[in-house]
Image (cartoon, rainbow, N blue to C red; front, side, top):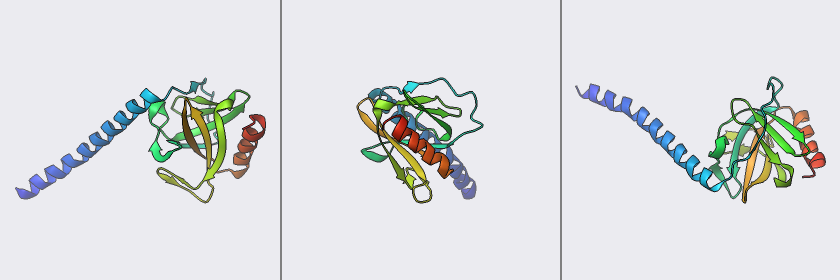
Length: 161
């Protein structure tokens, strides 16, 4: 009988942890959405078959271990980056696309790790930008070095960042 009770308790632990994680993320999202404005939306790209790479995360610049869950920015996935005069369009597969306006781009950086993702040296392409009065860092994993350099060059030259 003791084994059955222990087994039942262990089976209940997994859903309890899942529920605690869900509630924690939900609370963080609600709190962040109260203090951060929604990013400028953009029409979805027709197709992401020719994607640039992966959208890894958006974090607070002053607290790089705090993921931004507000307005759907916390979900990872495939991404296509499109540089335009108005800003950098971030088209995410399965999630709302958004624009990082040119005037809000603070800088570019390279990183090897973010919250829960570590890659080779300088394998993450980071864009530091302002959403309202809050400085954020969006991290992208673009495996093709040529594509990464093209996007960096476009942002630096075309957008004047």
